[in-house]
Length: 145
Image (cartoon, rainbow, N blue to C red; front, side):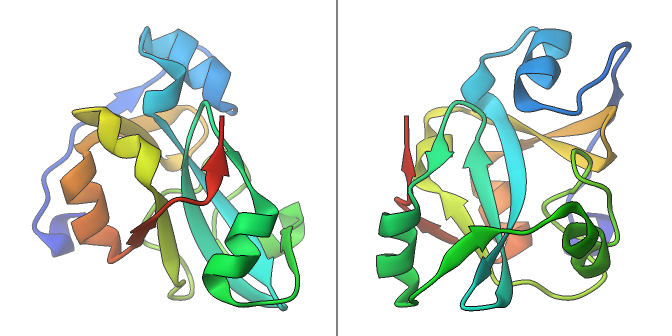
């Protein structure tokens, strides 16, 4: 984050933040303001989806957006292999391999969003616009409530 010119404060949680509902509860923030960093495979290629905690990936919409035949969520082994982080702690940046990134447009309804900082129990706060800037992500509609 520092290399991208963004200063963030890390927020250690007193309880597990491994899932979006647990993280939202621990912080006392709306579920939708939690950023889920999800590794998907699009025709076998790894991509990162940054999704609001209260939304689900609409795979048919995602396939159309990416113009691919198959999309599926990656298993835990592939997540760690591609990102260098465990499921539940994947941050939106700083991965082992550069990943094409897509950002859920519904996150922009929040002034501040909260993302994992490389560990399931440590988050950081960032504005939606800064999240898009530092990830180089493409903002799109690919989720359902």
